[in-house]
Length: 222
Image (cartoon, rainbow, N blue to C red; front, top):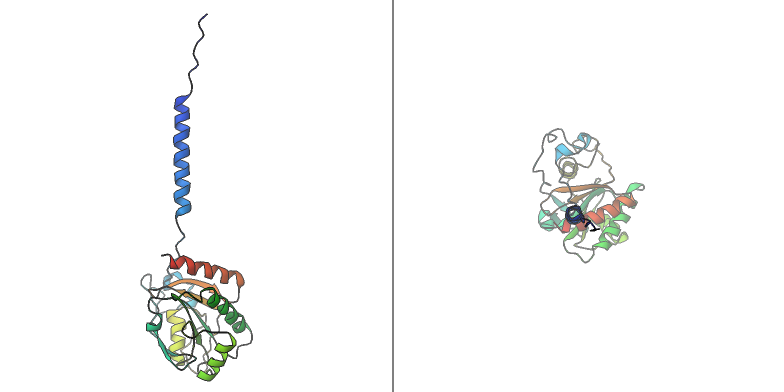
C-alpha cells in the first residue's frame, strides 16, 4: 500500500518567521528611540506659576536676558550661558530650611558634571539687598562652588523677581518685586542651549535630583 506523503506546513512556518522578524525589528526600533525632554511654554505650566500676561503663550518661550552680579563681583549675563545647558534656582544665604538642602544637591550636580564645560549652574538670590558679594562668596566657599561653573548671584530685586515669574515660571505667589514682596521656591529648572525650559524638579528631593542628572545627560545627546 502506497504511503501518503504528509505535507509540511511551510506556509505556516513562513508566516511565523516573518512575524518574528517584524516583531524583533519593531521592538528594536521602539527601544532604540531615545526619550526626548519636553519644551515648557507658559501654556504648559501650572497657571498658578505663570504670570497672567503670558499664560496664553504656547510656543517660543525663552529665558529673558539678565544682568546679575556673582560671588566674585563679576557681571553675569546670558553670554556667560550661551550654548550651555544649565540648572537654575532661587535661594537666599540666610535660609535655614530648604536652601541648605537645595545647595547640597547643587553640589551633587556640580560634582557629577565638574569636567563637562557644557553644563553650568545659576543660583539667584531672592534677598539681593542683603546678599552682598562678600556673603555670596562665603556661601559659595561653604558649598564648594567652582568659579565659572556655579554662579551665585545678586542684583536688582525687581529684575530677579521678574525672571522668577515671567522667565523661569518658578513661583506660585504674585508680586512686583517691591520691598514687601518675597518668593521662596524649591524648584530647579533645566535650561537648554536655546534658552528653553526642559524640566522642573524638586530641589529638595533626592529622586528628583537623580532624574535631573539623567535628563541633563539626555539633553546633551539632542
